[in-house]
Length: 455
Ligand code: TYD
Ligand code: MG
Image (cartoon, rainbow, N blue to C red; front, side, top):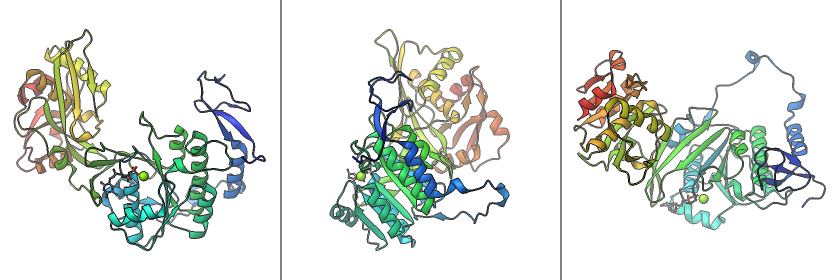
């Protein structure tokens, strides 16, 4: 512990500071939330002074000189797209994901891509030795001499190294292993993670090195470390998927330089991650034919439509209160649609348990799939499969009306590509679109009309 550095105890829930440790925060009333941290006022002052921003004058925005924003490309299309069309110089990107999901693999492959396009890249591992990294790179057939690797945990040493090596892209794998010797807490603790993130962020802004921070995810799904970390960085990506399945999804949840709806789909193979260029085909590959409770709908993921299979099971309930177990969809939305079905379709769902899932482990969250959810539940309730080759789109209103949706033509084009030639679309959207190939388009106005057309 560096004696000259003052520390304070900071409540991780509300930010209340105290010079002595306390069990309960007097401000927000939470227990066991105090963690020792370096006195922020000093560190921030030091960092800010380093950037010299205190001395600057405000300038009119149209006087600011900017070159065309240059982006660093990895050549891995799925990866570049999720970043908003490449990596921005000086940006800080946090990549979260469960252990073993493939974060280190993804980072090494992306770095190899950057290096292949003449960028100087540095990979700092706090988890693996250089020897282990070599073994991994062999497996991934990574050979570039522009990809520098080092095994280091001391944040001071990392910063010094970046200043001398001057890479274009830096990866810290993982931020939880970084150690700030000014703090007494162990690596991975909230204060260590926060301090390391801040140091790296200031460095990225000062030197322009684009920085990836790999972060572990806690049991309840948040990136370990304070929420503050997500606020500080420019971009937050989650690498998700079931480690028992081969598909992995890279999803942007925050992006200052692009859309947050983009996803990248990868497949984990024995020699690394492979891009999946046609995710619709993948998500529908195991779809059962003629099975009640299954329906296909098209969801927009950023700029592209993806077909997903929604599955529902409405079984008799054994308890007083019916269960609602929803995976991959917004459960409040499903509850609302179930209520609409009760009233408008006369289906008694109060004595049914409802289970719903999106096949392939994807998450979809947009109103345009409402009619898909209704169709899946109705199909299971009636125990009838929907007619072959049908796809349904539309937002449902509380009075049972079907509302218009966005990007209808892109969705129908994707449906056609995958062989869904009987598409039910909102009547109001239908008026505004032109015919697409031999797809049979049927306008729907109400929920009950849709159910009649589907079965
Ligand atoms: P890893 O990148 O180490 O995950 P993380 O950094 O997120 O903890 O990936 C670990 C898993 O990926 C491991 O279970 C083995 C698998 N894997 C492959 O299937 N093929 C490969 O080429 C590599 C490198 C890993
Ligand atoms: Mg790893």
